[in-house]
Length: 366
Image (tube, rainbow, N blue to C red; front, side):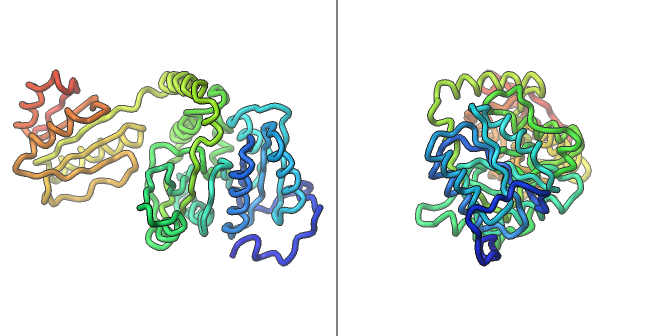
């Protein structure tokens, strides 16, 4: 049941700011212009949310008509709402922290105003957060996170199929993305808000995720929840500044946490405890925000590779396994920093072909 359908009438002019909130989740939405997208976002929330919420809108000095729309929406919305108005654009990070400071619910949902939600979105994300005490941050499925569709299918259909076919499925991720991020209150109490060193944005959500990991919390994706994201609708207006900001913040982030490496495991013979040890190592690296590719022979029936968003499993033809691996390694656009293999023939080929790939090599004796 949506919020709109659960309330028979709304009295115009009612002010929901005063008094404590009984919301299960506070939805924090920074807004800087984009009137049409903001209206679409809020309309979808009211239509497709079935749990008690409070909206916390932070207006970063929007121009009319967005400013006027938010003032009008405040008087007519059927849910509790706080509207925080800034006299200048403080940027997304500071706006998020204003929302966090104003929040008191058990869960916080940080949401970009260029998103559109679908039935069961928030319920699915909260269910994922509740599934384990150490889950601190939750993303939904999204076009921003790799979900694709054929031209003839709508995003409504994609969302409906995810809710039906992947309900209660949870995929661990190394970091969470801030366009739609559910945060547990326990995590906020442990590490606080977003780091404002990142200025107007970029890498702030990854920084928050790794701080969460250091505090003992995991990031996951609720596979049964789907949210569409217009992607950087605000930043499109400032391309050059965006590139400069991205480069600056990347250097800041990597100075604190190191670079994310790309590591290939080419496994042809490892079985039993040895394979378990290798896969455990790969999983630990994935959790530490490195990208892992695992190349194995087709028909190599061994226990499944652990599920993680940073792990890619590729099955290759066994007859030409060393050469298939070499081709994948040397043609990869973003080169591997390290290659680990248990295939004596492949390690010999890789040593001779080092000028082509320049990766560190490690041989595991089966």
